[in-house]
Amino acid sequence: MKILAIESSCDETAAAVVEDGRKVLSNVIASQVKEHIIYGGVVPEIASRMHAQAISSVTKKALDDASVTLDDIDAIGVTYAPGLIGALLVGVNFAKGLAYASGKPLIPVHHLRSHVAANYISSPALEPPFLCLIVSGGHTHIAAVRDYTSFEVIGRTRDDAAGECMDKSARSMGLDYPGGVNLDRVSKGGNPDAYKFPRPRVDGSRYDFSFSGLKTAIVNTVHNARQKDEEINIPDLGASCIKSVVGCLTDNTFAAAQEYGFKKIALAGGVSANSVLRAEMERICREKSIELYMPELCFCGDNAAMVGSQAYYEYLAGNTASLELNAYATMEI
Image 1 (tube, rainbow, N blue to C red):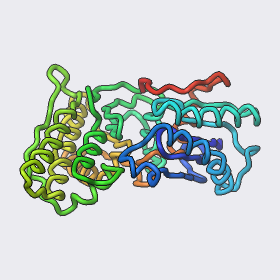
Image 2 (cartoon, rainbow, N blue to C red; image 1 turned 90 degrees about the horizontal axis):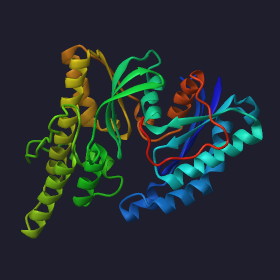
Image 3 (cartoon, rainbow, N blue to C red; image 1 turned 30 degrees about the horizontal axis):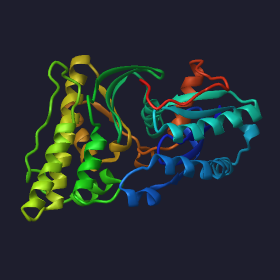
């Protein structure tokens, strides 16, 4: 089954053709990083406008790269929640138009579910159930993946997401957008023990996260140093920041894995590309004899191949939509 998938939840306009949920025939991404970098982050209005400009050509290239036409496609999958509402609407409406014109089924796909599905592409042998740590700029979840379309949230952030914490910490250090990526880059070789930061916990919720206090501590460290005209060692500060974030993520994830009896753990989301997080997850899983699955780096960030993968399983579960499908800025996984 060939699915044409469309992704436009934030600042990447993407389209892909995926066969049977696991085989990527094409995967095209038009990034907007250069347009947003001068603002230090994504400007929603600009993102929406650029999606509208790029989506037609990106979709055409995805079909061409896969050597197929719309007639060869069996269904249209599209990210419809959560994300920037204006950006989502561009993709949803374009997908609805394609579905109407071609008579193909329309499959709504949850953005976080598709991040989880990136692992099915990189690890074809992976099947539920497993525990998944979902970490991105706007979301941090520990989810039990019971089946391809059945998820139980075991832990989540109560305020800032892990990626948001790193992005805003990076911005305070003077690093360009995307902050998390540049923080990872400049921190290589830094001393992760140079600065001591807290690992916040949520009272009464063992597996929930709270990153706002950690973010504030890092930002205040930068501001206090600048007020005193003290030199800041950015590699050391960045490495210390990442160590604290990764420590929070791994502590909760492996505690949840032990209590719930999971011997398979997957990573998902843009922050799953972080080199320290990947290395630490590998180390702990090796020590605990737990199977670890991680997306290839090209499937960590927003892309349409992961949407096409999850769309396949949504279709098998009977989850299709009418042409009245709408987009939603927030939605439970």
